[in-house]
Image (cartoon, rainbow, N blue to C red; front, side, top):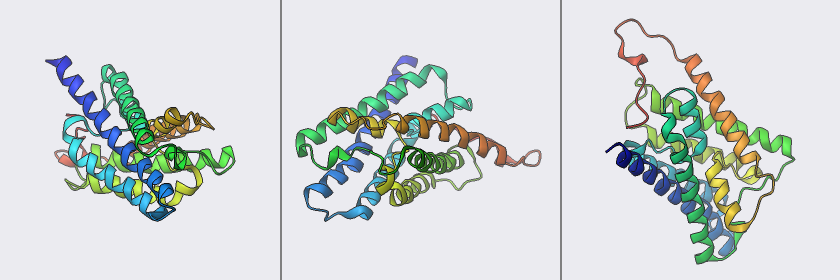
Length: 234
């Protein structure tokens, strides 16, 4: 029974990350194919919408991490079991690679397969990815672990955050904030320029954001339910 539950949760993560990459980088590829008709704002909105949809659809099934940095951050703060870290990360990466291979088969090698390649020197690119990833994980910590946040707001809050980060950082670094999202196009297109950055920045930023949110989380009066952690994992 336990093995079955873990398998289903990992499968949900693979499915969610598959659609994240299919729609997000896929929209960037479509934009390139149609000569820029979708536009930067349209691509950013596609990321926002698909993340909001996947959080709504999968949050109660697997927690809807759909991002290895999120999984590792929750694990580091003892909010996620060690036994499920590798299955989750493997499922997320597998879903992302499958989506990018599907996009390449359908659309061809257009738009750089939606790969994240820095348009800045390495130092500034790392800083952009780190700050955007910090913002994303900080919001996730609020909506996933704090019962004082209004119920039902998680999908919109996370989707909006991904959207405004994509608007700001998309032209600079691709605004990945997600190692799996960067891995898929890299594997499908053999595009590995500064790929390490898209693992190091999101993961270290997510780890930092969990610590900062926990530091800022106020202590409630005795008997107040607001300081109890909201379970991010079913």
